[in-house]
Image (cartoon, rainbow, N blue to C red; front, side, top):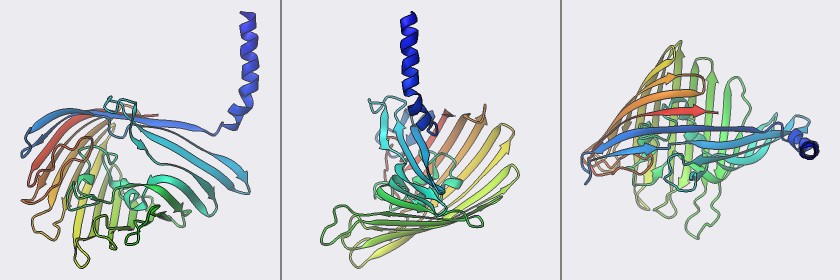
Length: 347
């Protein structure tokens, strides 16, 4: 027993410098699961029960002081499969991850990261972007769920810059080069957002440009304005956006989407409602609307029990559907709904 104690003491002494060097490492994560019933009036199978792992995640992050106000920063975050569907414990791969530098100039990071256009909406998002209840079934999308015109993206091969706050105003810019351009198409992506966030007021304006993935030599673009105002225990938010999509070398359409959202806090409880509209494409009656209601109860700052309901109604030629987990149908003109309850724990 004495020999074992001596061996442990020696090992601790040897590893102590390593622990000291990594004292600034933060380990964090979120377990975010719910059980839900989903329905689609146009699907071959009109209803199903699902257990969703949503955006459950695990990450490490930290920084090293390089002197003269300069820091090296890093983050590595992966999405975790907490319901066994991926079979290996990890689902949807790498989340926001990268390495960079931070100083008086702001932050620069290289890696994979949410675009500034996507992040601009986060302040008014009720469901962490990932559940069937999220307004992102419609917001940030053009043409429907199967069209791939989705501006709610986490971009790989990404270079990002975040400015310091000047009077509450910050800028974020992202550039992702096309690593395999062709003679007719370069799929580089550029995203930019300006944000004002002081006290009760949040306002963000964002733009994004990317090569059209179906029309060579043409670029699609999106603009977005997001606002939120807080009044005590109540806040109200809104999003309006315009997305231009090329359908051929000489034709395009512009689609408008919008959302109104609000939340009221009552002690440990929170009640929230979101209403979103996706406009039509070049073809009439190709839009959709969605209403979502959420109730949450905070047992602590880190643990919340929630229940939610959503109803998504397509126009006669609309093809939107739930984008979380396995899509439960995107049938033309369908009416879809979901009800669920779950638990969120952050650490």
